[in-house]
Length: 209
Ligand SMILES: Nc1ncnc2c1ncn2[C@@H]1O[C@H](COP(=O)(O)OP(=O)(O)O)[C@@H](O)[C@H]1O
Ligand SMILES: Cc1cn([C@H]2C[C@H](O)[C@@H](COP(=O)(O)OP(=O)(O)O)O2)c(=O)[nH]c1=O
Image (cartoon, rainbow, N blue to C red; front, top):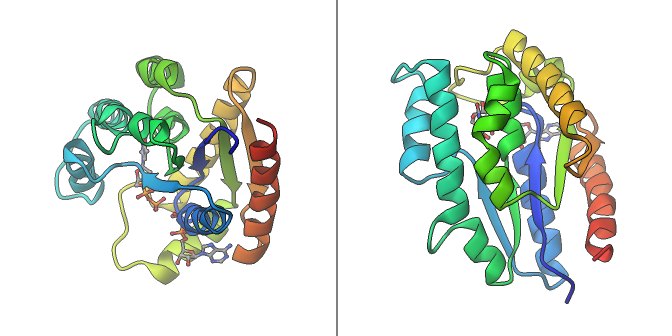
């Protein structure tokens, strides 16, 4: 078997990341890979704290939120039993629904992106994704999907913010294109079409090692 991969899926809220992450996980499993599907914010201690803030139940300064995400990410990587490093060591292909590019894009919209990149350097030094997949959707389409399908809307889920975050993703990818493997798919398409495009990219990635 080829080396098991670490795949990060990125995109604004409503881009269809979670749908695609689940789909890839199923397809990889059907091909005999052991797959661990995970996400950020995590469902561990710090991730839970973050969700109460994102849900609007507690307030926190944007810098504090960004720092909590750094801590949650390190927990995500390093946790003894469920951490990504442990899962990779155990032979799983790990797919994460969001990783540090989410921080660059979401927090970069509120503060200096270089500060956010610096504060995530420890995570990036420990573990870079083999591939970052950007589900590139127009903010208007994403907002429609969120409004149609959700009972609760989180603090970042406004059209203006989605537009700002989308622009920050583009900036972050441009900034880091030399040191990161980044591939985009058109998320405005039907789930089936997005899934096919993604699958093609992954087949290549898996064969390349
Ligand atoms: N390509 C697509 N076209 C139309 N609707 C989609 C598509 N992908 C996902 N959806 C729907 O849009 C909503 C948001 O998708 P989801 O995968 O949860 O996005 P994200 O994880 O990026 O927020 C869900 O209700 C999902 O069923
Ligand atoms: C991982 C991460 C997520 N976020 C935000 C993006 C989302 O608005 C929110 C929750 O993520 P998520 O549950 O993935 O929301 P969705 O399924 O709608 O995309 O957390 C950050 O602000 N910084 C980060 O580092």
